Length: 189
Image (cartoon, rainbow, N blue to C red; front, side):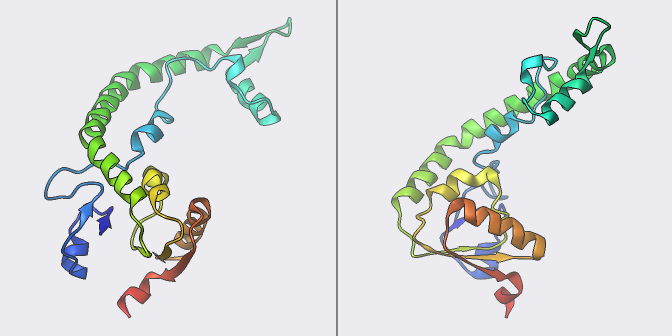
């Protein structure tokens, strides 16, 4: 059995003996979500003020561009000085912290990369008749694991409330699973 949980819930509550903790375990080392590093790269502050070509070519992109640029009397666009100063201040405050965080995450990711790759390869080769998902958000940080599961398995996924149900329905469509969604109360019935 595979578990994304850091705790021993599966062993202690459900009595499962052999569990591979994909994200590590509180008793040893904890790993971040399998695709976390790639996702985090998108949210780090970039080191450059947005250029004219970096905005989407739509009315929303133009609106966004006008937040950063202003037109002079010759109808030429120039970066807004207040935004440039603010941007530089943000960069100075966050850059060192982000570099340290990125290095830590890459080190942690590298330490656990081989284990994750083996897990994903094992999942790709294995055939499961049934996959039961309890307490996982089906978030993007574990997409590579979800895509490794054979799609012809019967999936059973438990949800907590209406919002969790909507999120899981969207993810299940994305992964193309044939899935029964059940309220988590049925676990305890």
